[in-house]
Image (cartoon, rainbow, N blue to C red; front, side, top):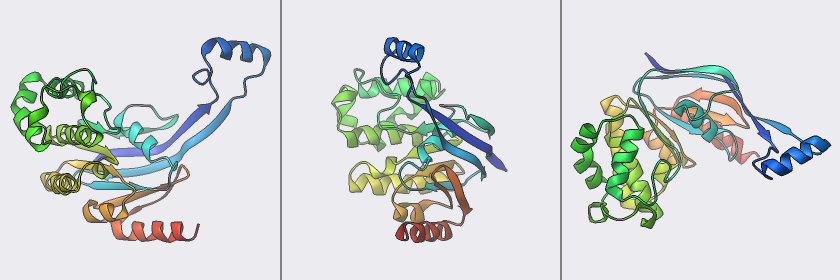
Length: 245
């Protein structure tokens, strides 16, 4: 059964709006006709399905639209055109530190982030010992999140997202952060999630990592879909493309 369906999705960005110069200057320039607006299609006519239990790897060169498609799938932003059907609860882990409060402690952030993902305090209470243990942050429970290293932040974020057991887990370069030992542990956790039936979507620049843990691969290049299919086949096609650029 398809747990996610993406139908002719396109995303258009407007470049050159007031966020770059301030609203007052924007209005003055617009009134004088001096405010150029540029439209850019970050994604164009993307169509694919993800079945329950898949671990989909998304590959493509920098600026190809990988992070944009994750934001669309996570519900963070709507598509300009097309539609997406999602059947299940999503735990997105897109940016290091996203959804966490720098002034709150590690423990407080676990409950805050858990609530943002739609879980009850009772549920997080039950899972908290496992989350803090897996993240290896037992000695940092009362430390402000902003004082953690980038590796420690990624450990907490990954632990929380993977141990609350969502229907769909979305990861953007998360497994490439942290020490070697934690990477191995997180990859083992990913394999456990696959076997448990959780659908996972992973963006990574490491083809080795994609080959090791993904069951299928989506290749997006310059906002367009190049293909989706067998992991080894898609990785080889991508490698050939990159070597010939």
